[in-house]
Length: 150
Image 1 (cartoon, rainbow, N blue to C red):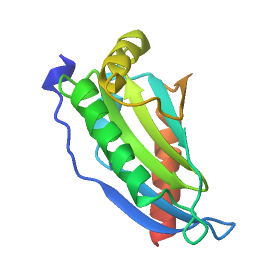
Image 2: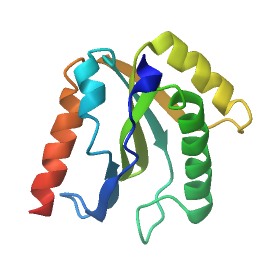
Image 3: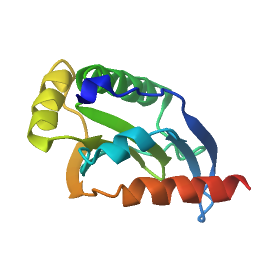
Image 4: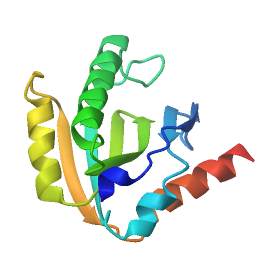
């Protein structure tokens, strides 16, 4: 059933600075209403990668950015092919990259995550899960981002 959902892979995003003047990069999928409306994606899984900020940009080094991209692609392949989980938004800045996923079942998501990351060196990841059946965090993020563009 979930695999029949259409996943619009359009991303919105921007780079800028946060309130403290630290460089940030923001990306999110603006067209996930069909996933919200199923009532099946109730758990948000946040993956936080802590990195050493480069003095000049407060962003990951180019090499670390490449590994982050490789990890993201591996997770998308493992989780989104049959719509078991969907990546909703990504925040990078102030020493962290945060990927926020919405899942139909955290146990299955965790098992797939472990398989997808098995080929990587040990990564500086912390993973949390939160019940978010109304997608409050997603909509708050989207609203904040859209307000910033005005």
